[in-house]
Amino acid sequence: MMPESGPDKTDRAYIYLDGGSRGNPGPSAIAYIIKSSDQGTVLAEESKYIGETTNNVAEYTALLSALEHAGRMGIKDVLVRSDSKLTVRQVSGKWAVRNERMRQLCAACQLAARAFRRFRIEHIRRELNAEADKMVRIVLKAEAKSEAAHRKSEQCGILEPEAVIHVAGSVKGQKGHAAAAYIITDADGQVLATQAMYLGRKSPDVADYAAIYISAKKAESLGLRRVLFKSDNMLVVKQLCGEFKVKSEKLIKPHAKCRQALAVFEDFGIEHISRESNEAARQMASEAKRAHEEEDSRKEADNRSGLEAEAKKTHAEMTLDFEPDGIIFAAGSFKGASGHAGASFIITTPDELVIADHSRYLGSRPANVPEYAAVFLSAKRANSLGLKKVIIKLDNVLVAKQLAGEYKVKSDALKKPYADCIQALGDFERFAIQVIARPTNKTAHRMALKAIKDHEKEEDREDTEGEKGNPASARMVQDSELDS
Image (cartoon, rainbow, N blue to C red; front, side):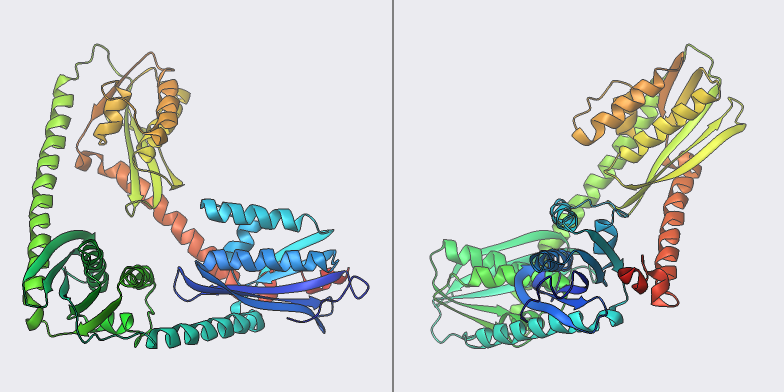
């Protein structure tokens, strides 16, 4: 670390910073360089290892450390440059911060920034941040060498184990239904314990890591102290022995958990064997996976039949004692199990003449909230059109039953959307909620999905334009502004 220059040298400076992790999460480091206003002199710089965390946490930590350092130096005017678009846009208030840990770090950085007379932050391309980036990579490389040396010092073989553990993972497809299994035997071949466990949708390597982890926990509970693991997954074996680096982000956490579980033994070894030699454990894993798939298929079929029966029952039981002057088809849609969401509605006359339609991107929302949003938006629109008696049709049984008062609203995430909808529906003289089959509501669903896709395209276009041309064109301020 270079000696600090006092305020008598300068009270204005540029700060270049970077944070990175080897894996996400994984071993992480930060670096920053504080330069004079003409960028000709390095006033201070620092790089250091900060343990295992995520890349975003490392970027924020670098910013906070740099601002605190600059403040101690008496600098009053700073222009921060970072190649992390997320950090720059969140700190400048352009992007929302949804993660609680990120929210705390962002608030700390904003508080530190307010201590300066003038604070600005801008995004630059990675090649313009080469110095800070190189400093981070040097720290991570040194840490990796230290970790590798530590691993190599550990014995990966064992001469006299008191137990042998055969482990196996089984996956249908590259990332489909997965299961893990193990067989623990004593030195004489007597079986001490076996287990097969369904894991959900995992990659093959994650399944094999899971088999080692759960078998290690079982061996520990049996009081075993010297164990030899046998696996037919060479990658996992080599990684746990320290011969291969763990490059995949998805394996960082399983690898770390296994290393922690293995550390409780007095001595352990990991041996690679052929698939044929591991057939018993592999067969157990396959059977566990197959049994779950069959049960899952049965439940899905029962659930589908139940929903269809519920929809038919609701439709059959709904007797109207009023003539509607409007029909509303409302739909919510997700892209991914819990990702971008959209809502849409179509309002027609009783003779199916469309009088209004609308779709809207909602951002990330919990399940069922998009349908509530669709009902709320459509109710407001129908009321503005002067409609007094409406039927609202949607294919979400839960939302329909809650709005009809047949189901209680138990989820905290749905209580406010529910209350908003009830208030909006109260503006009508009469209304009814009807459950329909999803295919009947496909037009509204397509509209909601299109709203999501249009938003994603716009985001991609903005990101692309921000990276094109002269890097100065994407900056918040020009270099000359620092001296103005």
